[in-house]
Image (cartoon, rainbow, N blue to C red; front, side, top):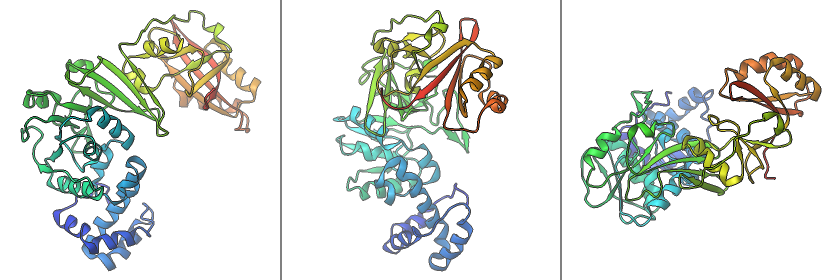
Length: 400
């Protein structure tokens, strides 16, 4: 069964009925893995008939959704594409907290994942989507949480509400093709034009060239557990700074860096003197928000090179960092020597600003490595000035 199964209105009639609910619960006992799917579908057809694919797809999507959206999603309805684009729940809650107290219209509510976070804190909060199937899924999902809200079938480029702050999460794909550059569906320019009376809050891909958009307000890059998740464009009425990096964690810890923070850091000019210090690779949100120097200034770190994100100095609490054991101008012979000297069995390779390809270099290093995989090192290769430099490190995951 293709993960792109297209749900029909009749599928939703069945899935939301008491009979469908019972059969979905029974289907949970089946593995429904890629290898077992054909056999599972054969068994489901005996009890479900023509709705077997809809039942199987719903159970599979719910299993994928729970790690991303929490246990609340175990009774939700999804399409595969809607789940892929849905905001992870901690990120949705963070954004909703910034919108708390405002009346909000989610112009592209899809199956209601963002709306579920908005409804409890925004008064009022309504949603709309061009796809009637997704709009109906959103109504079901919100009702399952006990937070029903109006969900309309409407185009994001049509004004159907008054006085509410528009919010949109435009599509990143068109006919299965990932959209790149500054393109979305609908486009930022079209959304801003139609909703010019009150510019919308926009959730965009984290790698988007937000500077090319030239949009007034604040750009917030949000990461979760080290991975950049989104770029939120806040209109001037809600913008507090020009750029912000928000670093979230599933454990609840997190921090923010803004363009208003000081950015005076000293450049390390002698990389061979970094032995014993820590190398810090800032969170993806910090890097994409162009706030590396601000982050370094906050923690007393030095910048290895003006063009690189790596910083050096004391280790910020709770951040993965690399203790420098050795340092030299990069060469394969030098790295091989370190591996043999220290009996390395597991090698992590990170590079910035050089032509080194980590997977290819690791293959070349394998003959020098031992079978003791408990002896692990990290090689950081970075261009310092006009030459690549190698840092032989031991990574540390726990807080100092």
